[in-house]
Image 1: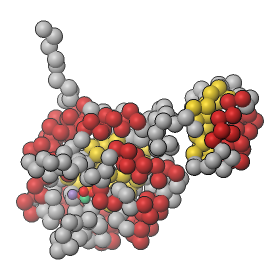
Image 2: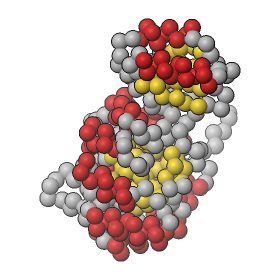
Image 3: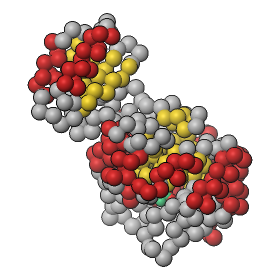
Image 4: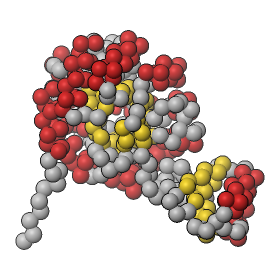
Length: 338
Ligand code: PEP
Ligand code: MN
C-alpha cells in the first residue's frame, strides 16, 4: 500500500501515519520527494483495511494499492530513478557507466595491464572475478583473496572502483572489505540466504538476472535486498536461456526497457555473457544503450585466446578502446522520413 501525503502535510501528520502503519504490523518506508512525502506500507499483515482507512487521516492525499508483488523496488513507490553511488561514481543519473575488466583475475600483471588499458579507454569501473562460479568443478575457480588484493592494487593505481562477485555467505565480509560493489552472479540470483546477508552489507549490490528467471522473479530477488535494508541495488540483464543455440544466451533487451518502467533501480546490460560472442559485444552494447540501459559490463582480456574463462566473449584491449569510441558516437541512427 502507498500512502501519498499531501504537499501541505505537517511532520506530525506524517509521523502519525508512520506510527499507524507500524501499529498495524507493517513496515513503513518513507520516501521524501521534492514536493511531497510518500510512505510505503510493506508486509503481509491482515490489517489492510485499516491501512486503507488512513485515507481519512489528516494530511493524507491518497492511499493506493501497489499493483505488483514487488513493492520497494517498484516505480509506483518511487517515481524518480534511484542513483547508486559507487565510491563517488554514480549509476542511474543518465550517464552511461561502463564497467570493464577480465572475467577472472588470473595474475597481478594480467589485471594491472587490463585495468590501465580500460581506464585509458574511458571505463568508469573495473570488474574482475576472484571467486568464479564455473559450470564444471574442473575449471579454474578463481584466485580468491589473492585476486582481491590484486584488485585493491589496481584500484590504487588507476582510481577505478572495483566490482567483483561474491558467491557465498561466508565470503561476504572479506569481499565487502575490498570491493566497492558486490556482484551477485546469475546462478545465485535466488540464493535467498546470500541476498539476506547482502541486505546488511555496507556496499552497493550488482544483481544479475538468473538465466531462467522471469522479470518478476528478478525484481523479487532485488526486493530481498531492499526489504533487508540495502537500497543501493543495480540490476544487470546478462542473457537468458532460450531455444537459441547460436548465441550463448539471449540478451533480453526488452527486459531492460521493461524493468526501467517497472522499477526505479538502475539497470545495466552485459553483452559479453548475453551473447558469448566477441563480434556481437559492440552492436549489442549500442542496442542496450538505445534501450535505456544505465550502463554496460564488458569482459576485456589482454590476450583472450589465453583467458582462463570466457575468452571467446572477451574483447582485447584495442577492441575495448574501439567499443568506447563507438559508444561515444551518436548511438541511434538517422531515420529518414519519406
Ligand atoms: C561473470 O560476470 O563473469 C559471470 C560469471 O557472470 P554471470 O553470473 O552473469 O554468468
Ligand atoms: Mn565471465
